Each structure stands twice: as C-alpha cells, then as structure tokens.
Length: 167
Image (cartoon, rainbow, N blue to C red; front, side, top):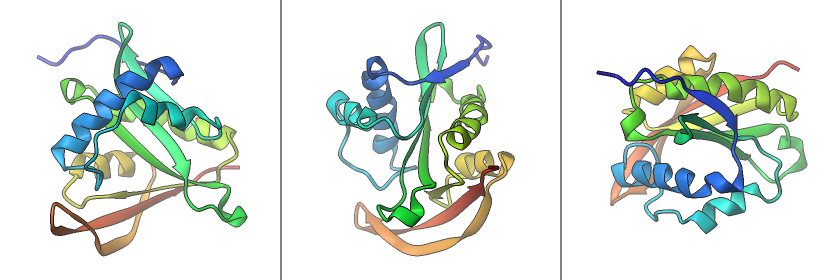
C-alpha cells in the first residue's frame, strides 16, 4: 500500500543537507540517474547554498525529507545566466507518491521568480520515470547526446530536455 500522508514542498535549508546527501547517494549507488560515482557528504551539499542563487527545494512528509530538486549553473558565460540545469531525486521509500511531480510543480515557478528563462537536464534514456516527469511538466526532448560519458566503463547516452519559462 502506498503511503498517503500529505507531501509539502519548501525551500531547502542548510539543515536539510544531510537528508539531501542521503537521497542523492541512493541515486548515485543505483547507477540509474547520474554519471557521478563518488557519494556526497553533508559538507558537499552545504556548498550548494553559497551563494544562494539557484532554487533548491525539498519535499517532506511529517518532517521527513522525501526528495529534492535543485537548479545549478548551466555555463559560466554571462549570456547563459538565465539558463539553469536541474536535478531531481526522490528517496526510494517514497517512489510512487508523485513526490517528483510535487517538487516540479513548485520548482518551475521558483525558477521563474529567480529570473531564469530556461531549464534543462540530461537524462539516461532508460530513466523513463524522469523522462515522463519532465514531459508531464512541459519539457520537450531536444535530442540525444550519444556516448556522452562513461559509467563504470560503459558509454552512456543522455536525452536532453528543456523547458522555456514564462517571463
């Protein structure tokens, strides 16, 4: 039975860094959502908050963090200052609760309010949950980067998704 406790979204704080790291590390260990192989520490996540330029949100239920979504710098050139990459991760024990969709519904307006005009991400083609999440929230598939990088000695492709924001 799927847990039906209500899920709320709020801006992440430094107090959430350990929970964010824990959820991110689940995704890193799965090898299903990122090229990263080094697990993150709380200190690694704390660095995301300085400077506080990009939205970072968490979803929680009964004060337990169930997932997070964060924007990051796309490119350092000034002309790309309104473009942000994003990542979204949901704890395995919260899968099936539409936590990702709840996060995305709050994240898109937060990014618009922060002055971004475009969001983008790169997703493994096999990660149907993330691709479907993005499609449901108005992202379009731009194309595929073939052999984008290796993960454990195997070349992996990624699907590029983007969404233009109002503003």
